[in-house]
Image (cartoon, rainbow, N blue to C red; front, top):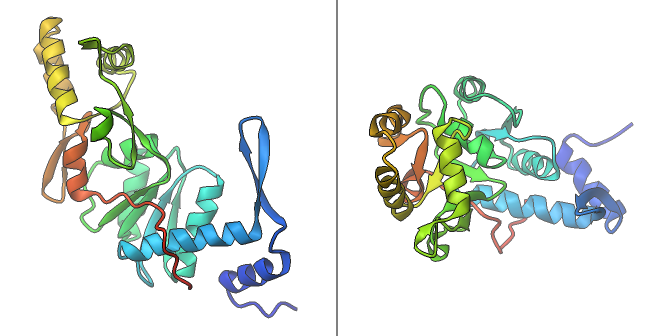
Length: 248
């Protein structure tokens, strides 16, 4: 009969027993790369350290909005190691579903898989003032200058040869046709977009209607559709894996 009382106890014993043996295999390109028990445990400790650094503590509830993947398991076990509780939501959860689960669980933070989940989080029907931190598992695409991009974003050029870039033009056209639910822009990219729309004589009223719905979150007002990264940074903290690791 097992003497383990908790999952962390079981994991530590498994790491001692199977240290260099593969715990998981993750697909990278056309190959599956093994992740050893030791590496897996170190990733959990690193992520747990990051959660500690942003203030996650014992008995806190943390939303975990992601599809099934290695990072989901790492996040889950890191939260458990802190004696906190995760509130799992499918990566395809709607804004209403996310709001329902996070509000009823009194969550104080949310871990989001990537851009899709961030958009749905920001489109919740009401704000959640108890959410103090948001952590991204993947970088999001941000139209900005390369040196403007924060650590949690992949910069995409919005200007090429003094003209709108092909990627930005495609994204804007899809956005206007409601095929894209959001554009992530730097302040300079937004100014460029406004001038572009004016030059193209796109009806300002349609553009204003797109921007008419507002998101009120902890004293800040953001458009649900067009989000400015610098404003976003004022109230959402995106954590990265820290270099220093704390032992649990």
